[in-house]
Image 1 (cartoon, rainbow, N blue to C red):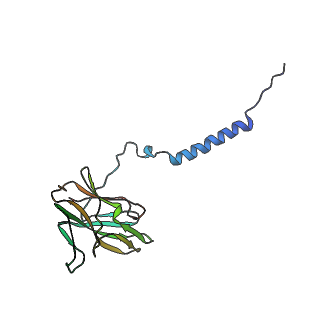
Image 2: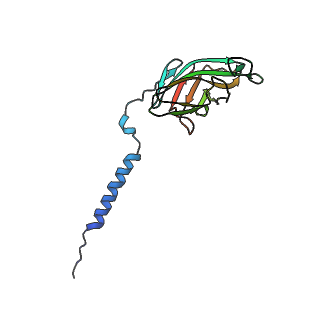
Image 3: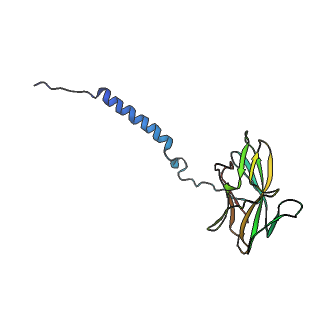
Length: 178
């Protein structure tokens, strides 16, 4: 009887090549947890007056304030007044574009977090409000974010957070407000 021995040949070679290609692709999508094994990631907390630098901007909370009403312009004639027992929590920010392209900003990328409560900014059309702003490279603006909140809200654990979305190019920002 004649025995027929078949070698692995091209079929085995193809399987090895496919395995190598899949391994390379998997390494691009795999987690990078092993690179810092045993090391604790350093968490930096920012507060009022400190500048957070992202890839595109330098962002600073300059001050906070609470007011029942907000003037539209310097004349003080036209105002927005918070309804009922609400007030406006005003966060004054400075934003500098450090990228090489114009960036867009609007309030939808921001939120005021206080413990487990999340507030979104009110869209007030004042001379100083951030609504839809474009910032050219190397320029900076100062704007206010207005949050309609209960007058008796305890903001001792409040933070301002921001992130990129389709309307805003801020990068990830988290600033403790107290």
